[in-house]
Length: 275
Image 1 (cartoon, rainbow, N blue to C red):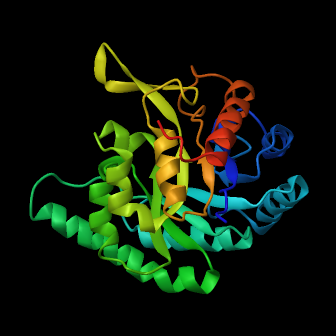
Image 2 (image 1 turned 60 degrees about the vertical axis):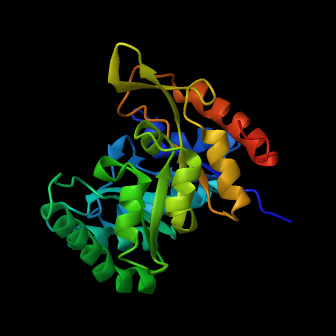
Image 3 (image 1 turned 120 degrees about the vertical axis):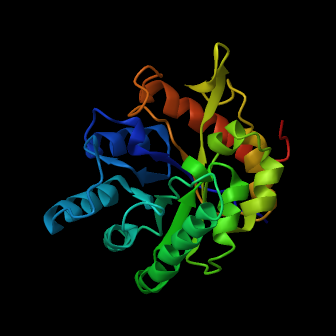
């Protein structure tokens, strides 16, 4: 009998609320876990003092929520990402979270600079594997930035075969790069550590711009993504990333998060009915 993934939400949906309020609302709506991106409306500081760390853990425990991921802004191709990544691994360990999310960052378009940058990013990951294994916290590289296409992310992951390094599949970015869910699964499916879901439609007047919409109202093939993942044995979390922090014009979390949860529960109960 297959296991239905748990459904979490990202605190990115709550730019104006305290962590306690976000957790209380998520619990009331029926979510099972939380992905931490904002704490009290602010991006996570990996150097936060011990007392503040304890308060975050206490709030999650009080809400009955596992922290399914701690989301960093680390870019593997940036300046000296290793020390900051290690601080995030330690922070996630303090919170008993199994995952730290990182970005790949930018890549040059020309060779051999592109290959050299990819190899440098792989070295950062390799150097972080011992700490990840010791702390019991994996590193998930998101389909984002220059790594939005899963084919690019697969190039990086092929250089780091450790089970402590994998992918965070953001449903939107591979789609806007022209990839179908089956292509993403073929590229990174076995390495997916977290599935982030969002839906969007392209601005008809500006092809490069997308507008986030309620789940099922856009063109991102989220239901097919979930069907492929669960059909392939994925048992990790599905997390709703409602980006209210970055897009103030979209619906309030009180509208969006309950709607996402209802639809995701329906799709996950019957994953074979993919559209």
